[in-house]
Amino acid sequence: MKKLLPFIVFSILATVSSFAANTSTINVVATVGSQLSLTTTVPSTVNLDVVGGTSTALGDLTVFSNATGNWRIIVHSTNAGKMVGDTSGNTGTYPYKFVFGSDGEQNLSTDFIKTLSGTTGSAGYTYAMAITYVNYASLTPVIQADTYRDVITVTIESI
Amino acid sequence: MRGKTKYLLLGLALIGAFCVPVNALAQETISVNLRGMIPKIFSITSNMNETESVDLVGSDITVLGKVVVFSNVMGTWTISVKSTNGGQMVGATPGNTDVYPYLLNFGTIEGINLSEVYRMSLSVTTPKAGLEYPISVSYEKNDDLSVPVYSDDYWDTITITIAIA
Image (cartoon, rainbow over all chains, first blue to last red; front, side):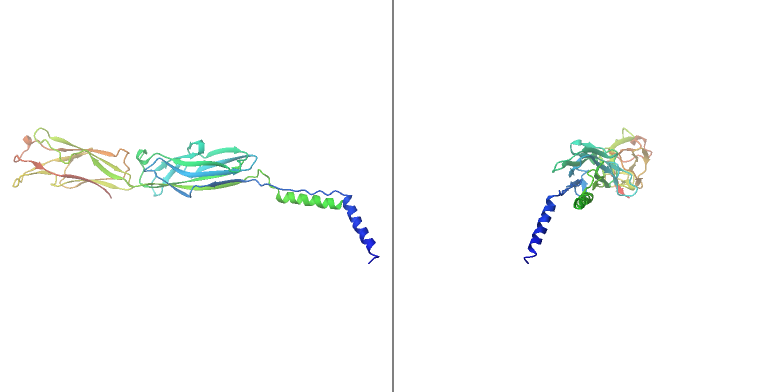
């Protein structure tokens, strides 16, 4: 055992010496992925009181972005800003306007596109959304009794 | 030197594994269904009084007033006009069997004999203000009657009904 001791000590010293003579670099990498998201308080189906009112609040849309580039919000109506009747043969339509935050009323005969850039901050940007329409009693021309529907799709995407 | 290479390769592998381009195309979508319900509205209004007097002596026509019909109902609907006494006014006095015939003018249709119910069918949504039908009755003046009638009050009741066919 005593004979081995000098050898062990030598080995350890040699190892320490070896580390001391070189530089090691450790790269610490932390990547924050691009995040572009939207959340909403809007229910999947909203009833519009076209007989008793002229507007209906949909709820809020909150968008979050940590992107450095441009991104946009696209609002699309399946029926180009009109609700169409359920009943076959009913060609009447009920037009409406879409209200998006401080951008106000939008005619969805074409897509409403809002382009933004950069980050939103941790709270995101919140937009109150609503639908405005002419009350049925004031609607011209008169359309038939029926249930009228449309689907609005809101998309957020980077560009 | 071999240790350095090992660390370099490890670092590159880590970068490759976790680094995602920040501006890669990302997309997220939500949808909302809009629904507006319009109830059936089917109405008739009139400016006529419950009783309208007919001038049998001085005129051969009396305007009674008008009815306005509103409908947003899909499909066919009808307007029917019925006379209680088959298109004649009957004497109020018991025992007086005389009658005073007349013809109805309804909208643009003139000379309707109400010996039977008059019906017209429509399958349109009316304008917002509705469809307006002026109503009058035509008759021979008392002096022109070929067969004179007893002096009396002569009455009839006209009932206008709209119905979904």
